[in-house]
Image (tube, rainbow, N blue to C red):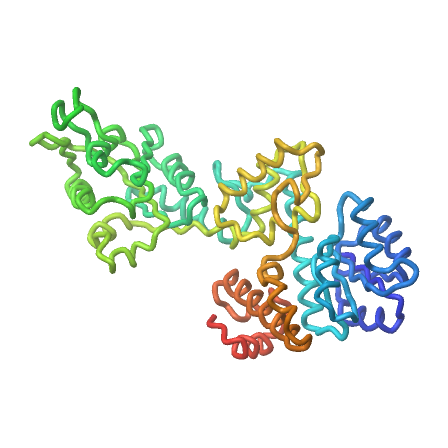
Length: 450
């Protein structure tokens, strides 16, 4: 990893170099803005700490030049300034800076910035390697993923596919629950038989029973002919019931009876029809809470959860974000540095589906092979830095404004790190680049519940 320190004070460059120096990093120095521009274009650093007050070529001039005529792969730029002004920081970010440091800066904060940038660089390099060689660990059938959570999920799918037990899949919207169900079917002994998928939340309440269990002719108004339900259509194979948590209570009772007895009774019929179906169900809801709220039958839950699989949300599998983005973009498009940073910082509420739509839209609308952050429709500013409204601080005394802003930012950053590390304080401290004891003190001071 290459880090460029651009400052016209030798002592400042020396002090920052001592903090950042470690194995695996190459530290470069520039004594003015002109030298910084030359080294950015020639040496292609990954991260630049750019002092605003330099002659010739101050930091704002360097940012403006890079915006106008920068290299294809822009480095991440952190502005360093003794000017403790919010307006200056906002102007720097507007011109392309990712963050800013005020002198005297916090050493832990400096290390954390370098560590986060290093993680993004390593992710980019890993994905670039995957694009140029076939890696069996990157794919599992039609599902792609190199992250540890996905590798664990692949192993569980493989084992679950060998059984005949029902499977309950948990996952947020857009994580690919149906793809997991299809992979379970494809790897099972029922692969040659039908795979039928139905979204129970998308069926009108009055038609759910008919859709699932079928009906005889004349069973209700409009039933001019008999119809097999999805259970009979999937006979011998697999039936995937998506959004099972939205199923009406009356249908839950009949579904439980089918799972217990292996017999389907069509609407309007007094006789049952035997079926041999493996049921895979999925939900984005908390079924335990639904049971507490008396919205979902506990006995049905236990019948469906022969094996439980949980698909991790995209925000918890950062290694996969760039891999999937490259797959959705295709070989003729690639992401710029600022676009890569924005993708890794995005919260992905719509998960893989959101990423796919974003990449396909950007590829269709882009004029160049390089996809920029503007074409993605994302902000290059980190969510934690972008969330506060700066205006609420501007009417306060400067010292109080700075303290409140720093506390708000640290609270957001720590919560985000704890969420990514499932509440593990030691792992979150490593992610933030600070000591565990320091993180524990900040958690207590900021009143954060891990």
